[in-house]
Each structure stands twice: as C-alpha cells, then as structure tokens.
Image (cartoon, rainbow over the protein chains, first blue to last red):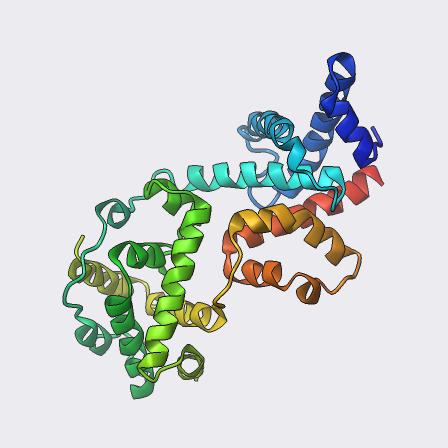
Length: 211
Length: 97
C-alpha cells in the first residue's frame, strides 16, 4: 500500500484490477485516517459514525477520480486526498448540526430602514460600558446600516455575529461557500472604507473595544 | 425581516446573552484584518495540502504562502479543515509510519 504519487496516479488512471486495487488501498487508508481527523467532530462510539465514514470514503473516491487531472503533485497524493475527504465530511456535519436551527432572517432577507442604534446602545445590559465604547458600537452599527446591501448585512450577521458556518448560510441563501466568502469580503471592505471615510478606522475602534 | 425588526431581535437576544454585544468586537477585528486582495475558500482548498506539509517540515508558511495564512485567519471553516488535516497527518505518521 506504500505507493508514491506516480504509482497512485498510474493505478487510478488504469483499468481493471490495477485500478480496483488502487481504489481499495485508498479506501482502506481513508478508513484508518478519518476517525482521527474527525475526532473533534464525532465520537467513534456514535452509532452514526461508521456508516458516515463509509459514505465519506465513497464520496471521496468518486471526487478523487473526477479531479485526478487537477492534482499538481505539490504534496503527497494522500494528503491531497485527505483535504477532499475532510471537506466532504465537515460540510456534511455542519449542515446536519444546523439542520434544525431556525434562521428565518436568512430566508426572509433584510430591508434597509431606520436603525434604532442609539436606543440599542443606551440599553446595553452592561452599565460599566464607557462612553467611548458606546460611541464605537454606534459607529459600527451605523456603518452596517449605511454601507451594506441587505444581502451583505444578512450574511455578515449570520456568519460573524451568529456564528453560523458559511456552508450553512450558503445553503440557506441558495449560493455556494466560495461566492459567500466573496460577498463577505466585499462587505468587509465596504464597511472598512466607510468607517475610514467617517474618521473611525477599524484599528482605532479595536483599541477602544479592547480597553 | 426588516432591519428594524432585526435590531429588535438583536437587542432581545443581547438581554438574554450578556456577551452577545461583545460579538461586535469580532466584526471590528475582522475589519482590521481585511485586505483588498483575499483568496477564496476554493483557492485555499487547492493549496491546503502543500501549505500543511510545508508547515510540518518547518517552513515559514506565513512568509511563503501569506494569502493562504491570511485566509485561514479570516475563515473559520477553512481553519477547521486545516486543523483536521493536521490530525490526519498526525494519524498517518503514527499509524503508517
């Protein structure tokens, strides 16, 4: 089973028994390695663990065969395969974990409108908040209202404030993780530039938040 | 949901979760780390095997692959995948020598 990259590629690109042997070996490696790679996400004692691993290994082999031409040989072949397996597994686990979560604001979207940021910040439960900190909160909230589109605002709230994974938000917004990261990046840039143009660069606000 | 309703929801949630408004800190932190040019999750996925192997070999990946490093600091999901890959390579070294 100890193959070099060229051996893996030759085996998987061949036909018949040679290809089947390479697939068997790769599957066996995945079934040994994945339990450790996913140990922070699933307990081996979980009754769903074994069938989940089988599904991930199967899906990984299909994707590896499909993307074989994109392997550039910049790493060990097996390391490249692990990245594919891990992405399949964690994407599925994130979707399962958040399946039942109510994220109605994602589906309904958000319309721009008057933002009660002054009242919100005045009502902060922490009475020890400094005036500077309250003003910083107001500036950030105001920038979120003024600079972002409803979709950008929705994504930023869900991912950064609510902590919903990109995969889950992308699924609910009917897009993909790559496009969502781009949307978030555009939103962060707009917010940063807006705050800078108002004389409140994020680096300065951060100092206030940390005080 | 209108933005007005969303802020009502945020405010209500803040009352029950005292640390909730603190999460605005995270937005500001992310803004301070934002670069005009960032690579995508797919770009990181393509480079992650090489990045992780180089790091394990003691290479200065933050210097050699700064865009991957910066994305990992910004994107929780890519970072989780990087962490799992580290565990996979630990397991490989241990189990398959």
